[in-house]
Length: 129
Image (tube, one colour):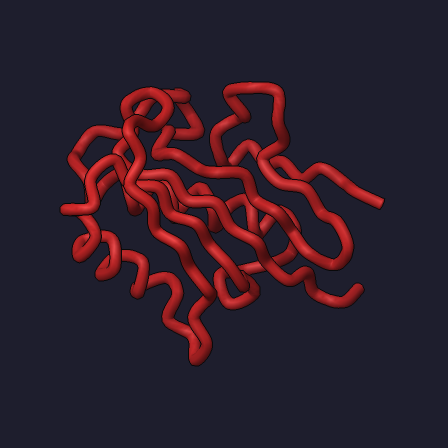
């Protein structure tokens, strides 16, 4: 059984997909880009501001499913420029600070939607209900 998860605390999907889907005891969160949930616009302020907004959006979606960053088991990070890797790591470590950080892949891509510099997708373990 699958169940879509959505929240107005994160941007609405900009295509035919769910913000996240519960399935088989896991939460699969679609790639989040740095859109302001109130306006739908890409945030201003450079790479660091974009990473913080993406992490805020992920946190809101995780919370809507009853999860948090500690429940995340895998992330995939897409960067427009691998030169931002060190800055990403510093900000990422602020949120994923538990004793077992999630597995992660980081990939440089040619472009991201709406000119974003970062996109992060995540898989989390759902709490037992």
